[in-house]
Image 1: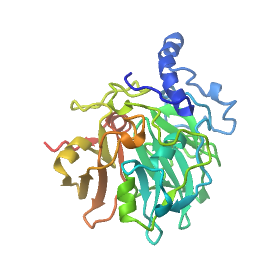
Image 2 (image 1 turned 90 degrees about the vertical axis):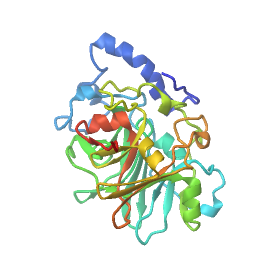
Image 3 (image 1 turned 90 degrees about the horizontal axis):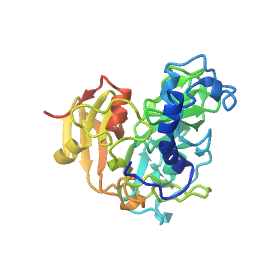
Amino acid sequence: MTFSLVHPSEAGARLIAAALFPVALILSGGPALANPDYWRSEWPQTDFSNTSVDFSEIMSGGPPKDGIPALDSVSFIPVARETRIEDREPVITLELNGETPRTYPVRYLMWHEIANDVVGGVPVAVTFCPLCNSGMVFDRRVAGQVLTFGVTGKLRNSDMVMYDRETQSWWQQAIGTGIVGHFTGTELVQLPAWMESWAEFKARNPQGLVMDEPDWERAYGQNPYISYDSSARPFLYYGEMPPHGILPLARVVRVGDNAWPLERLRKAGQVSEAGLQISWNAGQASALDDGQIGQGRDVGTIRVRDDQGRDVPHDVMFAFAFHAFWPDGRWRLGN
């Protein structure tokens, strides 16, 4: 591994676990403790008889349940009052019709991974999995219930496994789908949101709102996964690598089961394909490169709109994760 840890933390425990996992694999003959019998003491309310996945695919990422604490009490301040965020730092933006635009800085989501919020009466979960670079916003309303989400501490295909506190069901963040428990097979509604630079958000929304710094002792603004997105292999991932010679930690833009390599979009600037307009603009730092998030190399900002100019739900994730969750997905290579 070429990435390194800059701060001991729950997130850092994932990197420590990476070094120990191969030993456990050898000793056990399979993924360590991939059996609900080992999980029931921590998850007594989870219905492990109902699942859509092989339990051997689920493994500990290091922290225990809620070891990475999701945020439930989210507060905001006006854009004009924010002085801590560097211009190139990535933020996840949500602009619902009729509501003041708001954004959630990755410097906070790096350490919490989920923020439960309510925007204009719509309960949302803003999620970011640093190991897959996957940042998506979901509607928390499911089957007449409003769910609140936390972090299990488990990974599948290196992607965060979330859980809801109401039924203790487990959910795969990358696909927004229940994989264990009462809500197995249920899909969350993904809302149009995107990752952009702080400078872009505040220039477009001078009267907007930005999530305030949480009241936790964390190294906000630091990246505990230095050089992760230029590593040769993903963390705790043992599946197939992506086809077409695409590097596993190269970013791709996913819409449905289609993936556009970010490098193709960077070179083109804009691509019109499959009824979509996908644009790339410089100025956003990678959150997973330099030790200081705002100093990461420029990976640019992606916007995805339909032929009527409306924002489309999408994700900018690593190529290995797209291939893992959409093995039959379509690669839009442009050749």
